[in-house]
Length: 58
Image (cartoon, rainbow, N blue to C red):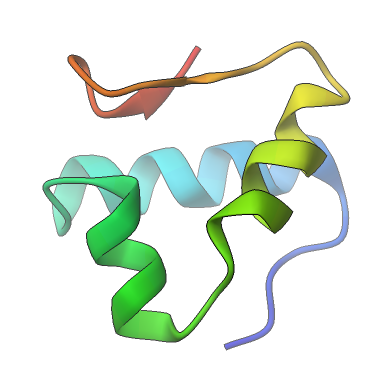
């Protein structure tokens, strides 16, 4: 799976996947063989971090 390059689009895409299909970021990343740190690092550049309790980037 290729992730969107634009951080804002990536944010929307990942949060939608977390809301609709996955119980955690780890589950999503395991399913698509993606390194969690890539997503976390990219979204931190625009001020977002993963909230495990809410299962979304905020």
